[in-house]
Image (cartoon, rainbow over all chains, first blue to last red):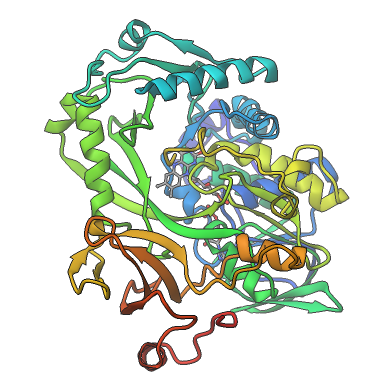
Length: 414
Length: 109
Ligand SMILES: Cc1cc2nc3c(=O)[nH]c(=O)nc-3n(C[C@H](O)[C@H](O)[C@H](O)COP(=O)(O)OP(=O)(O)OC[C@H]3O[C@@H](n4cnc5c(N)ncnc54)[C@H](O)[C@@H]3O)c2cc1C
């Protein structure tokens, strides 16, 4: 792999930019791998990357039914933060956020991490108490957040309407080192690094069956033939229940569509991320100038990647209340992704009833921010059978009543 | 937009009139049951990519609960029916079979 650098840009300019090599290879599947990862979204690719980088396992294939990053990773609104309530969440989300800080250098690929600050508005007394509690919890966890006043909110976000018609802004939870990153670049950067380590990223390869012998995984069936493996990692987000079904077990997960939309590009007007959980909407401005907007999930199970119309209406109404200038913007595009929601709004990074088959799912509406940390922990789990980062996130926690309740922190979809 | 007919009051309404209540036809396991059964009753979901039997409430209408058979990929509604039943009526099953031969669901109970 040729490294990207300012020098490389100059060198390639001399050759009319004809010398750039492909960022990753498109190999044919081999008969057998040490580890197969199903799903080339951010979490699957990051898992493969850290399997190679931290554990020296490079005989790995990442199988993707569509194109890499074409699932939720390429459809999300890219908010990165780690201001969760429970200790196990703080650990994995903060690990991820801190890895994002140097991810571009690490991958030699610009993921455009922009720690511009994330603000979560408190618009009811209940929310004020909830976020003050989170700020205290974060202080103990070593995650830097603070509860700020309405005046400070206005200073950071001049376009905001503090005394909204329904819910005035009473304060906000502020994480200055939260922000955004370029979603595609995260998938592409990891894919390029995996390919450079000799791993096979295989697109248009759909897994249609999981083969087991005596309760132990043997391999997968795909539309490109059978492929064997020692270990299998399932990282397919909204399709987790579907793939678990192939292996004969059920999961505490429901799949619904979450949608997002972007406006026409306008001049810079808001340089932080604002989330308004009570009225149910959030917004940030992309580098191109589009306002990136998201809101609620659908109210019933579906696999449509489209989303119901009344949720757009609800989201836009919330944002017009919060930022009156939005009412004059044209919306350019809308899309949806299938998110995998668990009962306690926390993910599962876990062994499964099938030996040597592992699953990483349940990131639901908020897993983009977790990609590096999740990959780091899940790779360790797959390689060694144990990781301190994933320990609390087992499937068994439901049976044992050890919920990691983040319904407050993950209340609005993001 | 999803359109449902409430079998309790007969009103045909669009989605915002109703509230989804998740998977239907759960077999209850209570005190004295095995851990496995109790866990599955509370948490394990069918979550199929295809035919789904689910509970709805006519929240902004008559307020009553009912069931619907719906496809989670095409969003087609095969029919709605009374919640006072352990399994979908034969007529609904036939409709589903006509559209999705070989559909499956865990044991009805
Ligand atoms: C609209 C929207 C906004 C969001 N906003 C945010 C946000 O602001 N911040 C945040 O942190 N998170 C956000 N999220 C959540 C985040 O996008 C996801 O949690 C995260 O991207 C999940 O990554 P993944 O790698 O697990 O899944 P995905 O990126 O969905 O990857 C899974 C891959 O598996 C593939 N696959 C599925 N089945 C098979 C099969 N049988 N064989 C082979 N391949 C298969 C899929 O094609 C897919 O590419 C948002 C999500 C959506 C939909």
